[in-house]
Amino acid sequence: MFFGVFWISATFLFAEPIPYDPFLNAEPGKIIRVTPDYWKGKLHWPGEVLKVVILDVWQGDAIFVRTPDDYRVLIDGGQNSSPFSTFDAGYDVIIPYLKVIEKINSLDTVVMTHPHSDHVGGLVAILKHIKVKEVLDPGMDYPSGTYDKFLQLIEEHNITYRIVKDGEVLRWGKKVRAFTFGPVRIYHGTNSDPNNNSIVIKLIYRRISFLFTGDCEEASEIDMVAKYGENLRSFFLKAPHHGSATSIVDEFLDAVAPKYAFISVGKHNKFGHPSPRTIEKYMKRGIEVYRTDLQGTIIVLTDGIHYSIETKYTRWLRKYSMNPYRKKD
Ligand SMILES: [Zn+2]
Picture 1 (cartoon, protein in one colour):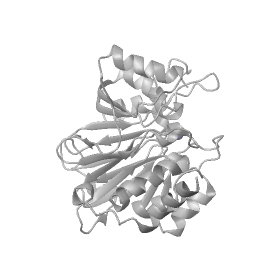
Picture 2 (cartoon, helix red, strand yellow):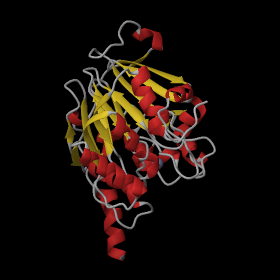
Picture 3 (cartoon, protein in one colour):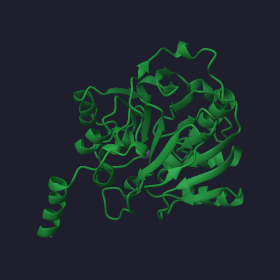
């Protein structure tokens, strides 16, 4: 045990810095913030613009990515309805969003970062009503009716199903680069194994990069820093685990060194997310924080040099809900 602890600290103290890999990083150069008006006349797919939308799904994650060449990705689907709530992020937010705002009925890739219900829940509705070509899953054993239903729908609809680990290059069209940085291993016996097993993805478009972290926690963050170091560096960070106190250790935040952090979280959630201590960590480093509970849906548009960030109230989408468990109002 003593030697184990010593060895781990020694690795951190004396390890060679991980070399910067230009393939894993954004192009150097000036990045310019613009107002959303800048994109007038330029918003069409295929085109030059990458769109990343952190949807307001109350407590949970759902992120829509549309690459310049119209490769469409959904990372997580928020929660499904339960005996305690009829709200289903798939039926009430994501399907209306895709159909009414994006005007699409299909997705190329669905990433299920981990099988907790606030990530996989809404994906059940998605697989039932949206055409999906491929699903990525970290592939851990997880006994839950919702996850079983999700796996069953993948089989019924003949969807390509891939279990992914870190170190994979994802082919999301020809204009962006995307890689998995986690999970570095399959976690057992950590604070939350499902959270630590989250798929972590870095997306790069020219000078701009995003890091999508699912609900990864300390154990997984430390492994990623040890394996990828400064190659984790990203301009935008989807904050891990709804801004929880169990995530975002200093080493990880310093390696990512984002300019902006996006926290997807529900107002008055029972977990007490986000933690004030975590918010303080971002503030101390001058990282600008956006939150879905306070600001609604967060929309980022970029051509790889210019970028805009806009927040929008999108709860009105519920009037297009397909939720069979929810009375229309
Ligand atoms: Zn979560």
